[in-house]
Amino acid sequence: MKLKYEFVVREIMGEYVLVPSGEAALTFGGMITTSEVGAFLIDVLKDEVTKEEMADRLMAEYDVDIDTANADIDEFLSKLDQLGIIE
Amino acid sequence: MYNLSDYLHSKASRNKVPLSGTFELSPVCNFACKMCYVRRTPEQIKNDGKEIITWDKWLELAKQCRDAGTLYLLLTGGEPFLYPGFKELYTELHKMGFILYINSNGTLIDEAAVEWLKKYAPGRVNVTLYGASPETYERICGNPKGFELAMDAIKMLTEAKIPVVINASMIPENECDLEKIIEIGKSLGLNTRMSTYMFPPMRREREDCDSRFTAEQSAQMYMRKIKCLYSKEEYFEFLERNAKGNTEEDNDETWGTDTEFMRCRAGRSSFWVNWEGNMTACGMMDFPMKTTPFTENFCDCWMKLTDSVRNAHVLKGCAGCKKRNNCNPCVAMIYGETGTVDEKAPYMCRLSECVSEIIKKELEELRDE
Image (cartoon, rainbow over all chains, first blue to last red; front, side, top):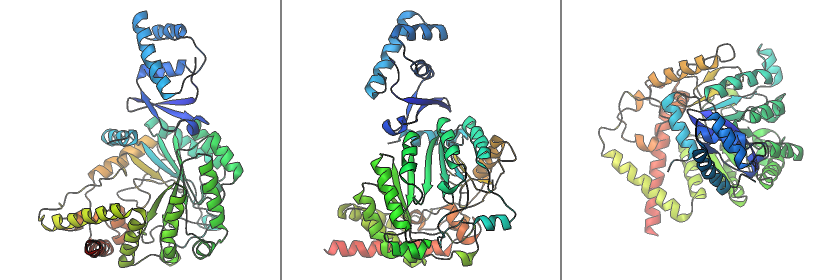
């Protein structure tokens, strides 16, 4: 899976703001805010990845176990799916 | 309810972060509007010994702004599409993750420009309509073809799903078009932001641009705008709400203090950099100070500016005024009218009185119906 649109991640006042970039700014109106971990996963999703690869990258960056990583990824992907921004 | 932008601005104001900014790229324009506060020809700029700041320098400034937390950036002029290097600058700013807005008269936005904008879609394009006919454009801008070109641009942008807002500034030369301009917006499903108050000339010589209404006329124009924008029910609610406001203020003897500060976003979470490279809190005034971010570090300039705004007492002349809530005085307007932030501005007082009188009269007539 990967992101359907391009985003520029901006960290502003401790908020991680996803700004649609390129033609995405036209297709996907508005902005999204997320956490630091969310911003990390968005970066990972810029290229085609599997859920297992996402979990590996998350565990390499943050000191979490596989169950926690999978649970966080499932929750995050569910939100992105609701927003219609992953494929 | 707060939206994300309101929330971010509120947080930025508290944390002294310059969340939104304006880059006034150039005073050069293909129109010569009577009321314009900024327009200069390339010859005038040269004769004044000044020069346009090149796009690569704006880009360097933008990098500092981004690092300081700026998210929203308005590109204005003059006419931005005339600015040398506009496309290059805009594209780079877009890639940097700014949410970009453009102020334009629309006449240079052709099919190719729309195709390009689709690839790097802005947050919004604000297209100014100076009238609703070629004749009005001729009177105000000196270019009768401008109307058709601007309308074409608005339609092309809208069809491309690029967000558009119609801006309009009303002066005696286009007052006959007020309702038509609003109808154009409604027919295209677009918001129209119309100003019926015109600042006195501040950044140009008075004889160049003294076309504005008297306070009485301005009040009438304001009420015509409200009446046209609102449905009959909304208009009645507006009248009742504001008439009630008048009565409440008349009974409030404690209204106003002599220790007021600027309450808007200017200098608290937003800034303006003009084409000469001066940064101010608001584009319409250099109070309380101006800084020079092209020669000093942007963050240092911003901190000096925002601290200055947060310590500047304003509106002493309005302290205790019973009509103040209805007037809702803007410091830039007071400054423009009086040259200070401490005096009462007779134009604003009269404008507020006239609006109140019209509201009262209109309400009585509607109730009689």
